[in-house]
Length: 70
Image (tube, rainbow, N blue to C red; front, side, top):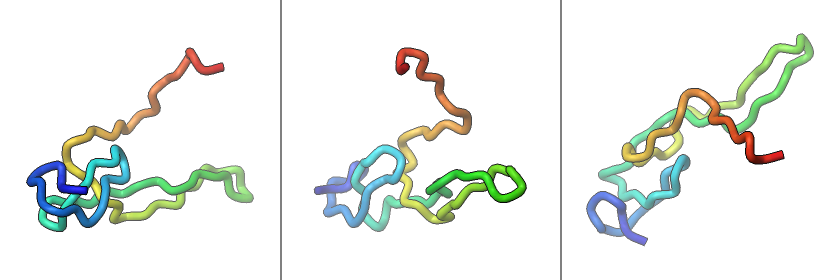
């Protein structure tokens, strides 16, 4: 697989969209691994701070509704 940006051999893929990335074009962005409620019923998140990111895709800050799924 080759890098989306430069077509050289890839070393990883974007965690958000799956585009292949070489070491020169990889960026990093926090990624939520899991969500849960703690013993005080407060929402908590397990986050990896340095997930691979392509810089092309646009992960959304807000959830996207999917009313067609029931």
